[in-house]
Length: 213
Image (cartoon, rainbow, N blue to C red; front, side):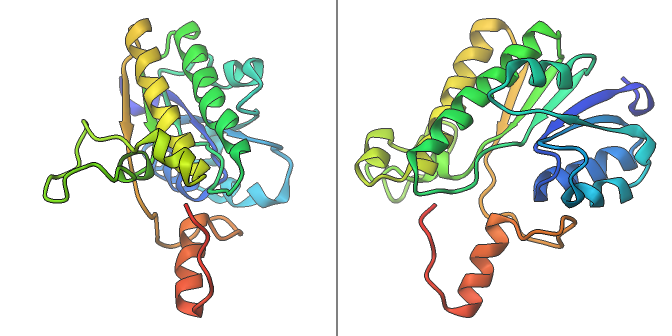
């Protein structure tokens, strides 16, 4: 499908990665549905300054609210699922990460979306103490969920669980699904707030304590 005719959805549109993804898609003349918690919030003002703003529709949505997610993906041929809880020391990140991802995929099946790109994380791969040190980590390597629980690294557990459940759901429902596992995402910031990865860099420069992620 030509970009001028394509309509895609980006969840978590107001964050660092979501903002840059919107910038890329709009610059290529895609029509984009971007999910945010409150479209009228001033913190999303930078999205209205992106290329071809008339091609952008901000949709109020919450990951755990299925109807709002379906409204966002309806009519789209592709979905980029970017939204996810930021690194946290609380187990509360698990439900929105896992349940939210499944809501997105269920909505995509119902709306007959052609392809879903899921932004997972390198943390879903890298925390596996039994993995041989001289062996490259690839698609067969997952973070050890029991180990993540034992050290209470809930963010890594949430990303590992979400990606695994997503692949299972996609296979069971014939959904064209791919995932990417970025690590720290650094670079120029479009949004007014500092993103989690940039905050790590700032703390390193300042010599302050890093939070586990």
